[in-house]
Image 1 (cartoon, rainbow, N blue to C red):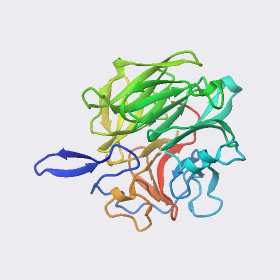
Image 2: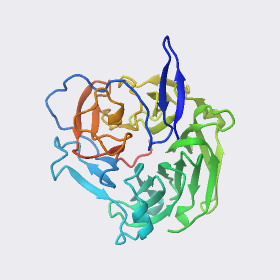
Image 3: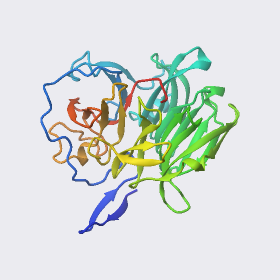
Image 4: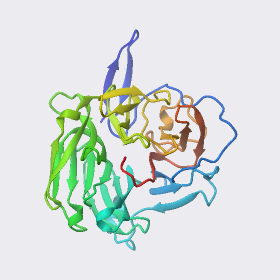
Amino acid sequence: MKRIMLMGAVISLIIFQIACSKKTGVDTAPGPNTNPPAVQSYPGFPLALTNDASKQIELYDPMMTDWNSSNAKKWSWSPTTTLGFSTNDIRTFGGGTDFKVRKMKIREDASYAAISDNSFAALIAYPSGQRVWSKIINGNLHAAELLPNGNIALAASDGNWVRVYASSQGADNNTYAEFSLGAAHAVLWDPAINGLWVTGQDLSNNAHILTALAVGGSDANPELTELRQYRVTLPTAWGHEISAYYGNNNLLWVTTNGGEYVFNKTTKAFSISPTNNLTFVKGMGNQPSGQIVLVRPDANKNPRPAVNCSLNSWSASTVDFYTSGGQWQGSRIVNGACFYKVKIVYDNYQ
């Protein structure tokens, strides 16, 4: 569903804004436009990319300078019957909209991953990929998070909700708590506030907000309640990504169609990201070293890269790297790829 926003300065510019990941807008803001240093390796955790072209979640090694080489891709996943998924799961999965790895203390520190796709969500054992829980869910799912108790949180932009499913209670459990939130796009668990950070719209007045939700009730019957003291209006419309700012637990990365920001939890203030406040950033985070990694649709870059995603207008064949101060370091390009979201494969919530 296209939403048209009128943004005036001196001359009005009509921009076709899209609240959902599987749609795009028109933007002329340039991407990196200076030549980076010689191609270099980037120490850090692996990077997970949701790839609409291959219909897989793929992990790449940032130390490898050529991501088209066979040894750059370290892991890939899609649902299969061997992994315990149904033929409907397999047919529905389109490459993913989110992927987060978490280590579960309640399960002897084993690692699991929360996955969302447009109409599909799953918890898997990581890195085996075996099914722990999954469900086909309508609503255009944009984000997933694995809670410390083994339940999964999901955000649905067309469904206008955030839900927590009691996935800890069995592979096919369908019990969930729901919080109404227009154009819901992001969910991130924060142990410091014991709640979920989310982005979306207040359905009563259409305000674009960042807020937090407390997860109450029991593992088997969760409940969701807004922590109103954290609610703030976003600096620009159509909130998208929320991710941990590794190295400072008081900060979060937050992106919207209109910009990218650093949010201070204490002051509830937004500051412009050091990466030149790029628009339409779909995935963004930082390595513990401070290096910033992000994905921005090829369709929103000016000029459009020579190697680009031709499958859709919300993905990219390029992943960009910046210093903590915002200086562009370089890119990794995968021929034919359509990367929508990038995630640091780091099991710490914050």
